[in-house]
Image 1 (cartoon, one colour):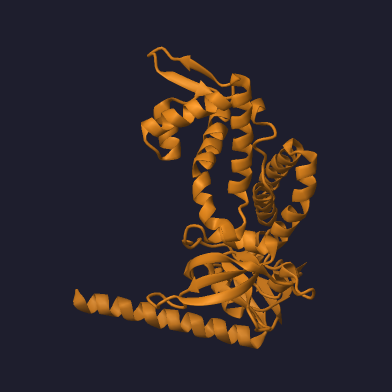
Image 2 (cartoon, one colour):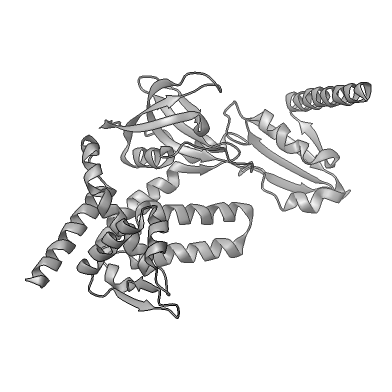
Length: 368
């Protein structure tokens, strides 16, 4: 009878875990029922991931619950998994641990986890950090290896879709704050080709407006941007992630445009912002030539070492304002040879900055 009860509990946990990870959209309210199962799953992972075990206080802190709740969850896991063990330390404080083998078939890395690791590897590849890239590639291989073969076959397409849907903008920079829950919702919508409704604030302080979007991908770099169509409109648009106040899935799917590629879309620009691509030619001084040769400014770039030791870099891209912002960091080591409008924009930008900072110095001197 006890064995039958334990098996029943484990079956119920499996069902609740599966439902809580991928609930039907129309049954979102039902998700509240399965919050305890999600906590049990999280606690099981934590107990299997430690070699020393966790005390009740550590379990409570890990889950963000009280000690009494942690005691109940620990007892529930012990009823489901007879492999669970405990050990008292020198101060007679008890710690519990669950062997990782107990979670085979219960806990597996999802497509989002594998895609996140492979995306990180791709980021390091773009930065030229081959050692870190190789480690992350191996980690992704291990994650795939421990997945159930059927689950891996089902997840392979999702992993590829998530990888394709998260582009890398070429200009590095600080990351803005994104509202909690927005990114997971966007990733799920992109994967399922599902409509979303977002509350979007165009500028700080503005009241957020509702928009129904068809999300195609996410571009990172500097700010994060959602690439999406407004329902009923043909033009692809960029939406700042930090201005999306909330995002919710709708119970409707859309048919993606077959002529759209996120990689091709991102490659049109130097950074993220889209404009008509132009031919760009930059010349780095001999002193900066070697360093310039170790940077990839754009996927389309070619480089040529000149007889005087300088280096010419050419590429085809839009986003001239972002080019200027990046080239400002190079100071006097780079000259813009083409196009003229990029030269003019850089000259105007530096002139405005010089006037601005000069006026600050003058005012500071006058006040003193």
